[in-house]
Length: 236
Image 1 (cartoon, rainbow, N blue to C red):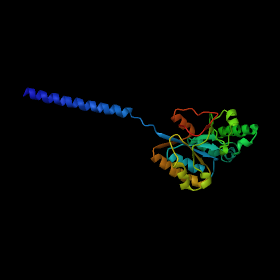
Image 2 (image 1 turned 45 degrees about the horizontal axis):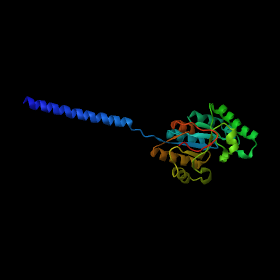
Image 3 (image 1 turned 60 degrees about the horizontal axis):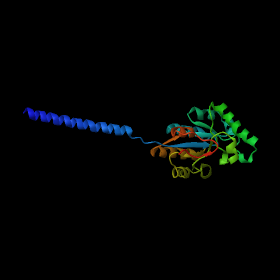
Image 4 (image 1 turned 120 degrees about the horizontal axis):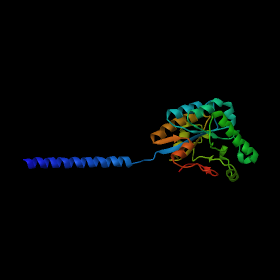
């Protein structure tokens, strides 16, 4: 009888030991499994706008997203409170020249005025500190400018074409049909159709597991520096 009890005890202890070992292995596997989150940067050019900027900011807040707003100086002067609000709500302020000009058609002196004059204005209005990203209007930049200006030139890899189509479903399709991890999306601040496309796009991207951030945040998440003297269109 004693031998039987001892056998049962030994068998029970062995079973418990095996179960405990399996649990520890599963715990280690759970800890070691790491899946990098898909991340894209959202950008808006040409604002701020009395018609759309406030709505865009509310949508970004609603979907726990952020964006880089590449702002024109002439619009900034007309909407000083919106410039502050963009930055206050956790978004990034970017430079889009004073007057939205074709820079390659300007003298070097005028290029400096358009770029650095606007940067100083935007920093003064918003309180933004540190290096400011720059997006040339129309994507208009040449090799000489890339060599001269010691700033990050931010382009895009996904074009919404919202300035052209003015249709929310088409804008959304232009974005979602080409999106991938590390992309930079270009949209424009000032069109009602962009507001609807932004909400639908944010909702869909969130459902697909994307995190939507500003350009600088994208590079921070990917643990990469934003290069200078080149055209930056994505973060791979």
